[in-house]
Length: 114
Ligand SMILES: Cc1cc2nc3c(=O)[nH]c(=O)nc-3n(C[C@H](O)[C@H](O)[C@H](O)COP(=O)(O)O)c2cc1C
Image: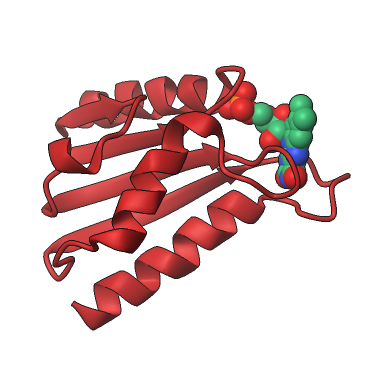
């Protein structure tokens, strides 16, 4: 199962998530899309595909902030999880794709330490 976890304000990252889901399903893979991700609903198994834009001064979109906060406060055992991150942003900002970069670095640490 591929858990597609989106962080989006205006729908761009959600659109990318929907499209990637269609392509993965065409390949015979199973996906679940989490547009309001809740860590309690997402098992630490299979593949997590995090797709997030960046807003504010390098911040996560509001809808994914509780998920990231929960990951930081109560990190699950991640040894059975594979992950990938798609960062979406605008290179005119100094904080280009800061949320996607943060998610990638943080998940790498979690997977390595658990
Ligand atoms: C108020 C505002 C702040 C933004 N801040 C950043 C930023 O700090 N870094 C970045 O890479 N992109 C930034 N962006 C660009 C968005 O990440 C980009 O438009 C993205 O496609 C939005 O995707 P979404 O609709 O899924 O949220 C910002 C956009 C807005 C409107």
